[in-house]
Every structure is written in structure tokens, then in C-alpha cells.
Image 1: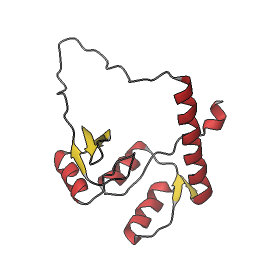
Image 2: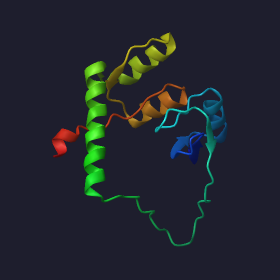
Image 3: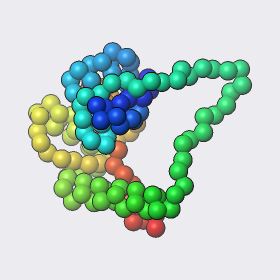
Image 4: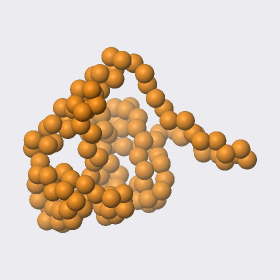
Length: 142
């Protein structure tokens, strides 16, 4: 797997993982990579610092933000996204991977959500099936 820093035509930067550099090239060429901020499909690799191994094994810290107002706004937005998906999609439980592949192959417009194992998600992505993680229910966290 390769992680690329990407940038859209509107200068939004984001990260994405690809199975290989050719997988990245194929997905971008077929407009399967979109900016999560503006949905632009005009995507290029952003400048990246190389990942250099040192003799000292250090775990890379996770980037975090602690801003109570921002945190509340993000939680509200994620909850709205989740509520919309749940209200406008069919829950298929652990049949998600099977159903998603069938929808992809039939080019149906049906919207679903459910559960999938990491391997099932990886296989779906590898096969070009668009899937997104569903934000967790933020109401339960308050």
C-alpha cells in the first residue's frame, strides 16, 4: 500500500491510500479519486516528504486538534452526514460487500450501508467499488 498526499484544482490537500502507483494512476484517470472537500476529480499528487527509516523505531504521532468549538461543529456535521445516510439508504448488515459489488456491477443507483471486514473493504477498493466509512453515531458519544 502507498499513501499519497493529494491536492485538487482548488488547492484542497488530503491523503489517500492506493495499492500501487499504477492503481493511483488508473483511479485518477477514471475519475475515481475525488476531493473530500469539493468533490473535484482534478487531482494531482502534492509535495510529499519521504518516509525515511532510522535505526530508532519511533511510532509516528497521530495528528490531533483540540478546539472545543471546532470539535462540536465537526461532530454536528458528522452526525448530519450519518443521519442522512441512514435515512436515505438501505441497511444490509454483513451482506455489505456482496451487495456493494452487485450494485457496482449492475451500475445501480441503490444506496446501502452495513458492515464489512477490513479484507472485504480492501477487496472492494481494489476492484474499483466506491465505498466510504460511515461516521460513528455521535449522539451516543455526548
